[in-house]
Length: 80
Length: 231
Image 1 (cartoon, one colour):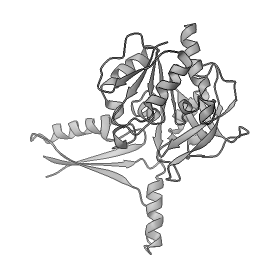
Image 2: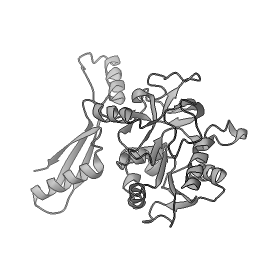
Image 3: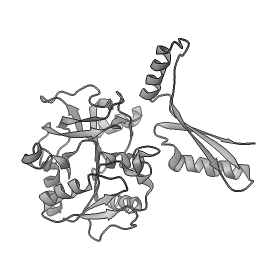
Image 4: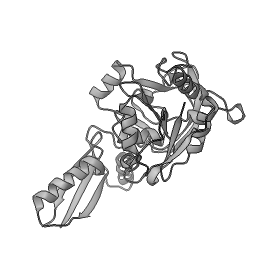
């Protein structure tokens, strides 16, 4: 089973890399860009067919390692 | 006074830390591989050194914080044992939850490597007995991710309980807004609630010899040594 975890900085945390990318996009002429937040994507393949169990396991992975919940939030999507 | 320095893949200042500990305590420090599950018997202080453990993959200090030896370090800290995390070691301590807050990319996005003044914000701890309250010391900084951040409640608690160890300042001791990395309240180092765990971004271990720039960092290590003798 395939799953995707998206980790982003919490909205209360400043994202200087996102700001730099935002400035660069504007300098390329993309005037409509209002804000950019950078994040990370993890594509996982997990054994088994039990979606609920996979989701629970992946949430535990996020809490323990994939995200630092002091500064980041995460989203888990199970494919199919 | 028995000290141990933990070596992670990608650590690079473990010898500097061991050298500073030896200069202050007169005893050789043991270098311990991160895969160990126990500290040497009778260890008084554990140092997590600077460097780029695991290549800073995922987040600085994140993978090292989950390595086997960290359970032993956590147990040592919970028993009241001393733990000092310097630079990457500080990042590992916040990632492991032994210290509050987080360390983000420097606000100006550049690696900063230079001499830096610090103000000693709290004396009388096992790490600062040999400093004076408000003393300004000059040590080195060398990091890309030293921007200290905590949520408003945590920050208020740290400040209220006097858990800020050092702040960045100029030579006269004036706090620099955000310098050199954007840290909240110019925080350069923080203590745990019981004051036995200290994390700091600057490198006191590199300022222990007049031949290489000064000795302002030595007081931290003589404080540790003196405390262990008194205990």
